[in-house]
Length: 123
Image 1 (cartoon, rainbow, N blue to C red):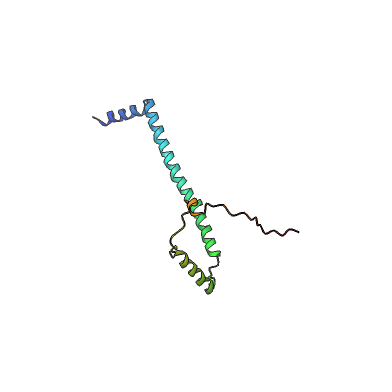
Image 2 (cartoon, rainbow, N blue to C red):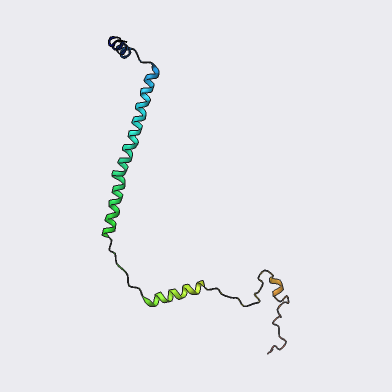
């Protein structure tokens, strides 16, 4: 094959019309390239303007706060420690415990006596 025939074939290919499928193929390649570029630029924007702003605000808050230690009141601390230990300790009940679900058996079924007395002073 001569160089002249190769040049003619290349020229013929470059002038032929593209088919509809080739157009769609080029369109989808461009579309996916655009979507990929959008994701990359969106991640860069988020990192640059959102995360760095939050980090700077956090640094300002940390640097502006006054780190100090409050004095501890020893008596209140010991009282609170004693109450926590008392809360965590188990307590025992004096046996027998009254059965609250059988009320009728634990009470007296008799009616109270009337308060009539025969020793009334009559004038």
